[in-house]
Image 1 (spheres, rainbow, N blue to C red):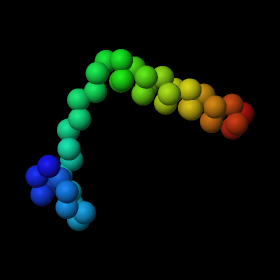
Image 2: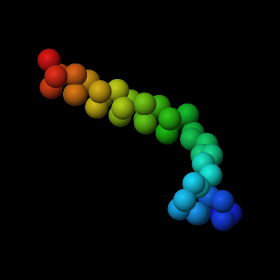
Image 3: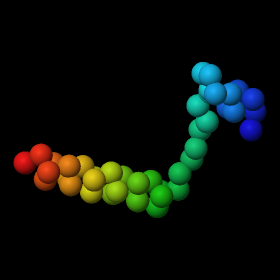
Image 4: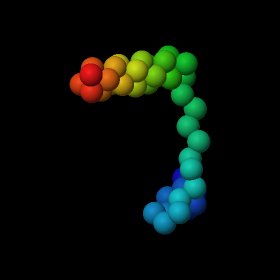
Length: 42
């Protein structure tokens, strides 16, 4: 990685490309956790 990505003060964002399967899994997990939080707040 370039130094711009490794510095701790004002690092550059490092782009990451997720597969569709990985993206879907991530979004499903987020939705499930949001639903749990909503249930707790009800």
